[in-house]
Length: 321
Image (cartoon, rainbow, N blue to C red):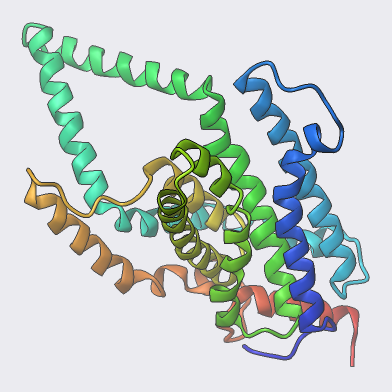
């Protein structure tokens, strides 16, 4: 289902998205540059400041996009649906995207499984070969790792704050604006990640300092990061417009942050390369079937993009011909 925009010019939509992307980054530096707060006393306090800034940016983006969108009703059912914040079909929006995304990491999962098996055997040897001791030791290590992650402020950034705030701003807010601006659905999937990559340009200065102020090294590192964010941004946008669920790109975002870059091969295990290739084939084969809008919504009327369908449905209900 493709249609013209819903009352926003393309230039206005692009300007709003650009402003949101820049504000998402700029506000991170506001405590010291604008508010003139004293430098944080620890890394934890530094990250907590950034968490607050990212939360403020997300809330303001939600409010501003609601004001710009040609929707004259502030009913929660309308707004939450536009942003993809829904409770229906929740398990499908969690299980299917995570399963699909995991296929890209088939090589990584196989390598982690091999490492886990080796660790289990090591624990068995330390426990004098008693199965109960092996299981208990592995379980203790797993629980210890979970507690370590829960108390790690960087883990909170990678697995909670960054995914939630970035998906709210760069998917929930920007995609409806671009759809109402008249951009075609699949143009948005490839165009929207440009804004997402803008929010990661601030890492250049950090990497530049870490690499002894080497412009070449910093450019290579940040270039790789930007390429990855563009690819993931396209995939996350695809999930959002196909499913109409914000939770779909959100869980994929958390999973990718946890796994890191996919492992393509391992010098010692050829099965890792085979798993990666097989996983990518499976991913491409299931990409459209696993994201079919009918799996996530009850009413479609033969549309190919739930988010555009829902947005236009809301606009038509509020502005009858």
